[in-house]
Length: 125
Image (cartoon, rainbow, N blue to C red; front, side, top):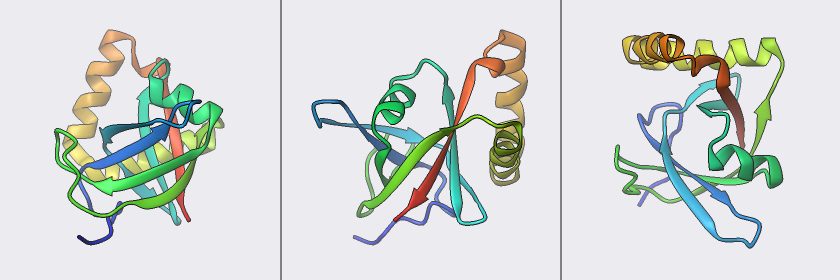
């Protein structure tokens, strides 16, 4: 297999770690800006809680269902909180996913979930 390219891959499997060390993988959209990558999630999602507790993550190319198609990259992640960081994350995701991201944003705003999102910054080691 080859290494993933988060800047080009449509879906990436984001592996986070529980307190007992067990890995949990989730397929996500990911976009890059200035050497960092960004993912968004519901604020109460397990991956957000796990990253708050332990910033170690791994990334691999995957399909929509999460079937891994590459080797893994080690990385670290954190939840971003400043308005500037959130704007950077949104711009990167909107630039990469275009109308799909725009539609997702519209439906999230209509359902009231947009303001409950969290944005994750990922740095590959």
